Image (cartoon, rainbow, N blue to C red; front, side, top):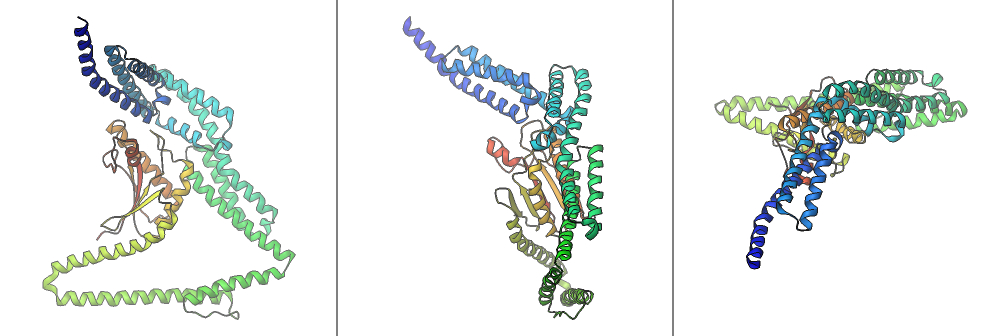
Length: 470
């Protein structure tokens, strides 16, 4: 009788262990997805319940507890984690603007954020989460209005510190060195931009990328006013500094003239020197255009002589065009690699001569399309790269991993691509450059979605600098 019981238990364990292992992995995967979708923030009750059930199951596994109870707990943990994921997705879709406003506030440097406003806004936000998780949509909507007001107030304070104060401090420094006297134009421009930033922040504290772009312009003008005024003050105190400054400028112009094959001398006025340099640039351009015209004439002549091979020539011309574009892009890529750390950006060249800037460390928060401020410098280097490739259209591609529904990931990838596209438009300021955002959701993975490392690689932004098409 005892032997029969022993073998019954052993057989039961052999049957149950693979099933338990499968259920355990399923529960862990469901919980990992919930974590990725920020369920701890947007569905905390379901998330905590899932963790509790999984922990109890693990404890019973360690002590060889009842197999049926272990399976029940694992199944329960999977259901609770799935509910947490669904609730988190629904919440970020229903309150998308509010979630991203909160993200902007949380991503701001602590030095810019007022603690009391941040604490109050977080308490109000969690009341919305609680109401939404309880299914009380009317209360969630009602509380969200107050929370939005509080979060926006906190954002305004933080944005003023981050985007307005640097301009005002630099303007104050410029005034101390008599910028009103020596650089009135640059000073006025800086002050005007400062007022624009203040007005923008007050009207729309979520317009962070616009505020950053304007702030950078204002700083440039303010620093220019300070530099000019410092030179003016130096000349005022020591007139001999003027000659030193002019000698330095003459040396720079002379170096440029040497590169263009033009000899400049000190007897020429500045206007005469600039006219000669301009003429040199125009002559160089005309020389290149003449060479291109000669080449076109030769191609036209060959085309006329070999008209019967028109199809082959057309194909060859297209191949030659693509090869030329690729050679030009390859030469530029050698320069582009100096702008980036390979850990941050991967630079790729396609067969069609498109240049892809794969932004490996542009990491958005889950469910959010807010660009983290610490990545602005990375995007500014991307802009320098784009400027090296003129007359090319830009396509910003958003990609996600497979965590969440297809619809959720598609919408999220589109929002992220558009956010980066808007940033590029603000900072580039090139009206003739076409910039479009496209979301591909989870449809174009570049790594295994079954691993955490692979999912990290798949969550990406690709900035594609498109080669001209025939």
